[in-house]
Image 1: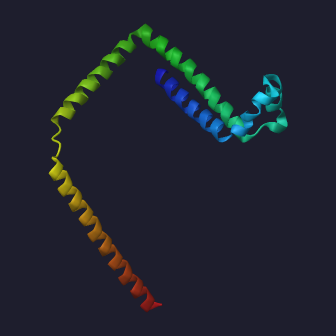
Image 2: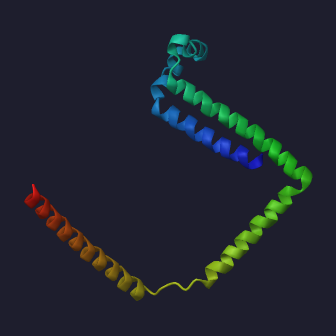
Image 3: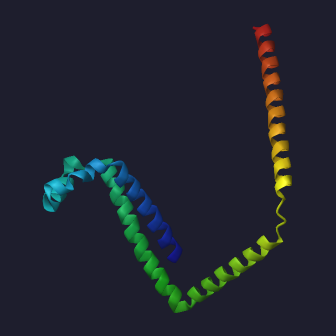
Length: 144
């Protein structure tokens, strides 16, 4: 539940934020009208749009995500799973650091040489593809 809560909070926050930022005109007259008048006008049936519905779905996802996050966190603390998760995360980071130490990084000259070889092969393949395209185009012109 903990991780589902995090996922729902992120997804809901992103969708609500994108909807909010792409439809600022919906929210722009809030200051001019005052809170009560704005809310009354905002929820009139003729003013309900897809953007407003998407915004509220995002807000609801955030609220559900927060509830699931809290429930999951409480359950993890009761079962001791939080300590296990922290221990596993620490082990993963230690292992990752050890794997990075094993990497043999290329020198600057080797990287430059490999870059030149890659660019040369791209140019050669581009010329080959261009020649094949010209040849097939000429062949089609002969047939038509």
